[in-house]
Image (cartoon, rainbow over all chains, first blue to last red; front, top):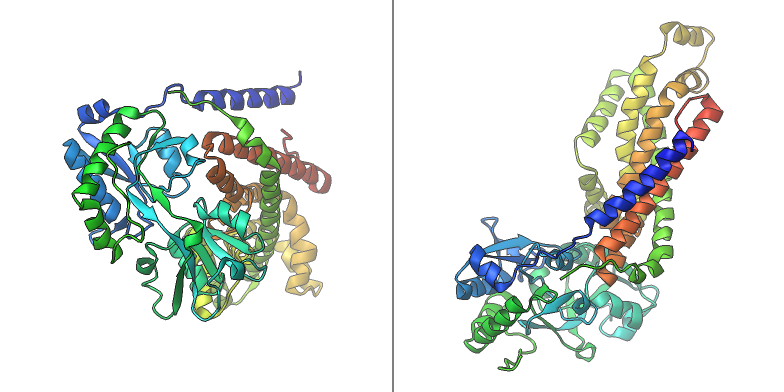
Length: 274
Length: 224
């Protein structure tokens, strides 16, 4: 074997060995007992999704989700440690056990549920169209044209739906909602089809634009729970009970109204059966 | 609780990822050629130009070398539209990467210009060459061999740098990897395949550059 071939074969073998070594043999997700023993609860929230989570004027993570997480940590009697996560890595973060559960607008989907487990719902998610007023982009049919570009955030629930139901529209995939909104305001895209619960908060910086937000109830309502590592049942079952208490004593609805300037579009029915 | 590698969910997306690799290569080639041309003009100005022009080039190089590429492209993509200049995502990224590469390639080519012997410039001047003629017929052939290895390195860096385009809606290799990841949630599988494609891409580029170097300039570069 020549030196070059030896180097090439050696390199390939090293790459294969590295891939094997990088595969975690045991997931490091912490059970309820581990969390209690450790004295801290690690929660992933997405600070680019205000008012679900945001950096406040003291540059501290704040918002609806951190306050719900704080209420849960208080019930557990442990310290809350918030971890900022983005849309693409939020599921890998919890699946790999780097955080105990993830919030960050975790809509329940059957695809996601193959990789992580969910608690009972924390809040509902309602979908609709965000566009500039006067363009007539208020129905799915109006969006489904090649001259329409939809600005969307990569990795979100709306993407598969758009590929299926709005196939003729162009799609511009960006990394976060401020960039999505800026793209529509600047005319890079004409509309977006996505969650509308937090959109009034997000559109505040673009006061010069006359926005139009149209709910599309026919799309259906999804529910967001807490994303927990697969098979971490001790923690997930405890969280279900804690969330039942936070729903029935009105904490979650009160925090929602505080941060979203109004009640949830679709109320979460609290059930004693999980 | 074991994590099992399941590549079967990711392998159907490999043609899509390879399409992204083509776009990656395209962006790297365009931005490198544009950056090389910018660098050549700038190096000429720094060597032969009047003081104000030299100061302008120096300011350009200082600005682009001392700010992150991400910030530069963000400016072109999101700030220029507020001034009425709306570029497509591909154009914004290609321009940003070209301007960034131009700054680094200015410095590389300036070093090449400085390695020239004064007598050669004097001889070209005595024969009545204009500055562009002098650069094209005298300086470039002379410094091409010396500059070929650092220029080749810069090209490989350009290939890697294209991954930043994913943030600006350009669906090159990294952007497509993020898309596949958000569909399958198989991060380890998606990014190990993506890494492998990058390795093959850069090794193929290195091989091609080494062969071109041997053929054009008799540069004895290692091949694999």
